[in-house]
Image 1: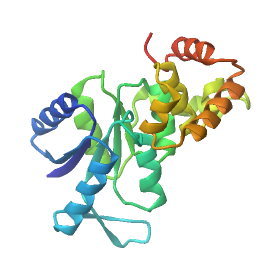
Image 2: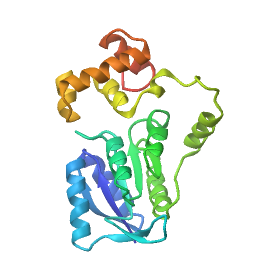
Image 3: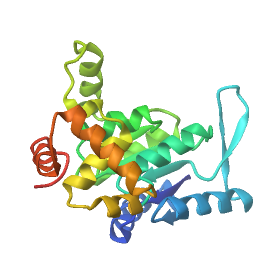
Image 4: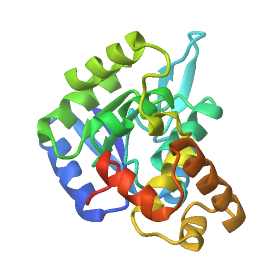
Length: 231
C-alpha cells in the first residue's frame, strides 16, 4: 500500500484527490494539511508515532519518511509549495513530492522539478494521471507528462538568452508577480508570504526591472498575456 499525505488549502480539492486515490485500491491518504504549518506538524507527528516508513537514500542507508508520497499544491497560504520544496531540499528530507497544481505545466513544472519535486500534474487533467503519477513517484522515479518532457528538451537546446523574461525571475519574484497581478496589496502579500512590506517592495522593484515594466498595471497586463494569472 502506498501512503500519501495531501497538502492543499482547499478542502474540496483534497476530497476529490483523496477519493480518486482511494479508488485505486493500492493507495491510501494517511493525512491532510491546508498549509505549511499544518504539513510540518503532521509530518513530525507521523514520524514520532512510528507511523512513517523508510526509503533508501544516496549512501544506501534507510531514512525515515512520514509517507511514501507527498501530494503538494503550489498555491498555498503563507509559504508556497515551491517554498516547501526548497525547505525539504535544504534539510535533506527523503520525502518524495508530487506537485499537483492548477497552473499549466509551462509556468511552474520546470521550477518545481528544479526545486526537488519528483513530478508535476495539472489539476485540470485526467484524474487517473494523478494515480499513475503517485505510483511512479512512490517507486523513486520521476513523473513527467509528454508536454513537460518536451519543455525540458527545449530548455536544454534553446540558445542562451532565448527564454521569456519572467522565466528569469526567482521563485519569490515569481510569487510576487502573480500576487500583485491577482490584485493583492503589498501589505497583503507581505502577510501571506510572512515577509516585511519593505522586502516585498524590493521584490516588486526587481520584477519591474527584469521585465522592463513601470507599474503594477503594466505588470498585471504582462501576467495575463503570458498566462501567469487568469484574466
